[in-house]
Length: 240
Image (cartoon, rainbow, N blue to C red):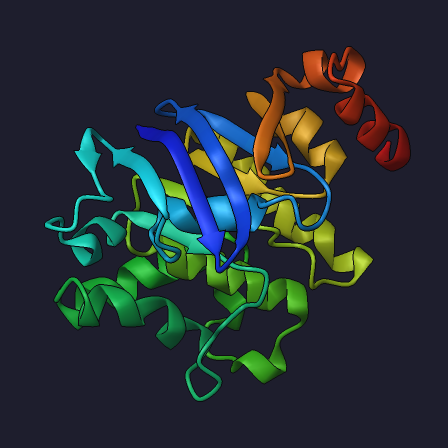
């Protein structure tokens, strides 16, 4: 479904990604871990071309999205992304936030979208908050609305960029529970996360990124219990 081929990304003289190769299969959950500044978020953003790769190619469903002739906005309609910050419109209710994109971008009938939006709010356990505004919601609830908003576009896969990093510890669990539910439902997911317990439980594959390179990848059991690369061993000794 997703193929990242020898992708490099420079910010001026700083090379953040150094020839990354990554394959994600349909229905697979891939969790990317590593220290801060290793290029994890940049890699995730290049998959959606929110960051333009300096070189290399990215394919989604056999379409080369790094081709300048590709309509990237059309491709993005099938890619759900959840960021660290919630980015909800403060003047819209939870229901309105979730319903906005399908109406404006996909030009779907508002009545149909209202039903869809309520279904997605129910999916994340927030149907009872449909008419609440973001400032009336906790951080965990706002992030779950953001997930529902991404799901309302009925994406082929989901990208999560450290979705719990801005939350208080007691709110992290409710967001991770929604993500676990999505994984059980077969949603293809690429997740940048510092939540090692979540990674061990949900991931089909864990990727360790450091210095803009994938140093090691494998099943959670392989990577967490039997890491091979010395840098992976050092990192995990500090976070587990």
